[in-house]
Image (cartoon, rainbow, N blue to C red):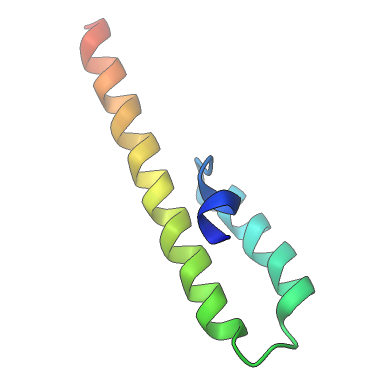
Length: 62
């Protein structure tokens, strides 16, 4: 679930919007803190991958 939500995430601002949207839906659940951690982890991984691809593209252009 989380990976689908965050797989195209490219910025922390975008990740925060995803997190807030999911919080509104699921904060009442006992497992929300674990869900939130998973969302943030996979989102940050997606952002890191995006940034690496941008650096690789920049190197190819130079």
